[in-house]
Every structure is written in C-alpha cells, then in structure tokens.
Length: 72
Picture 1 (tube, rainbow, N blue to C red):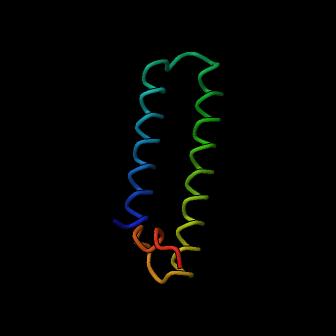
Picture 2: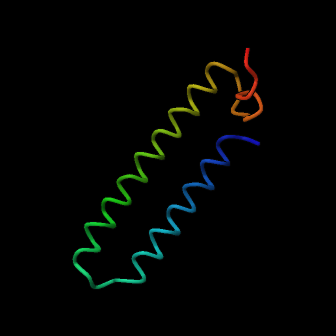
Picture 3: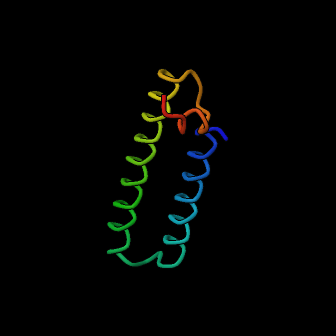
C-alpha cells in the first residue's frame, strides 16, 4: 500500500477521536485545554508523517510501503 493513504487513515482516526471527545463533554472548561493539546499533538504527528513521506519519495522514488521494507 501507499504511505499517503495510511497517513490519511491515521488523520481520519485522530479527527474522529477529537470529535468524540468534544461531543462527550462540550461544556467543561478543562476539556478545551485538553482538546487543544490533543489537536496540537495531532498536527505535529501529521507534519512528521508528511516529512517522512517526502524523504521516502526523494530517496526511493515512490511512497510504497514495500519499498521501505527492502534493506538496500
């Protein structure tokens, strides 16, 4: 499979978890700080994933996960 589709699936799961957290406790003030921290970590994770994708594409020529598993 492609690394980009895996990253998109992970981001979709993170956004789903964020929406579940926000819908369960919409009125608690502590929850807004927790949700801000959660979404900040998710953004950092997405940026790190895109960085790995760009590095893999530049070195191997594609974003296939199978090309990453080969030890050359």
